[in-house]
Length: 431
Image (cartoon, rainbow, N blue to C red; front, side, top):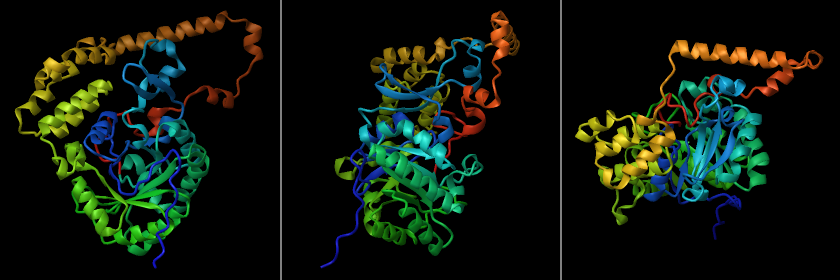
């Protein structure tokens, strides 16, 4: 008799990655409506886009009654320091999830290079997700320059310390799993040593992207190390997912079985058409026209940022189709509904979302440079007058130290955080 393979118990509020086909973490393409559509078409799990820990720290959790979502928001740094500069400024949504429709099938991926900040950020969202995943595979400079992403592959001791901290301080208290996503290294021996050290940290899952750090999506995935990685994970009871050149659910399960993995992720194929998660037995990949209609409907329902919606439509609509050109000229949900011919079922909803997001005809006039300068000058003068009106004795008796001043200032997302799930600075894959 052969001994049953070792298997780490699935945490009470977590999820087993084995036997699953998941949406891979992608910048822009992993936002809320994309995840919901992937789940609608059969994805078992969805990874959100990499969100930098410093962007998450300092956010406020809101339940959005209009959309049914949970939103983690914050004001910009300048506005938070002096709200009188722009009293009616909008809060930025750093992360949005749908508790009913995503439920416990959402994995939050964090970009980090520090155990302390990783724990601070993860604690905020842990009660709302099925797991926390550390990005240790993104090769892009916006991540590696901060010591995050693929840079962590060159600092395995640091990566392991981050994972151990998340396991003990976030995973165990919230009873969810902690996982990591990596790339293969130059040699099998190097990859094996890394995987063994990662599996010893207490993680429940590991995803291996079958490309090295210098490789790009257009280069064919390398799978000759995959069986070894799956074997090492299996010895520790850690679920192993594969990623790289997987184009459909059926192919994902076949490859996972061939290489001994617990499951697989789909990335670029799902960006173009999320229905790739539907098995052939249920109809397989749907026509792009159907998928685009469903995506627009879902994006409106969750009031997705217009720029993100337009970007995804650019990936889903074939460039040679007349609808593509019509879509590119639109600047609001109302306009795109008309361009795509969805007025009968979505026009009224589109108008409401445009008004809520202040886009299209509801967009507020932008201040000119001179007007912004005058507003800042007026706000500064007003602040100085209020300060002068205070009791002189009280004002001079309290001397704020540098530490006190720093505590009053929220982290500067623009300078420190790098890309989060909101900014549209990049369209590349997160990992």
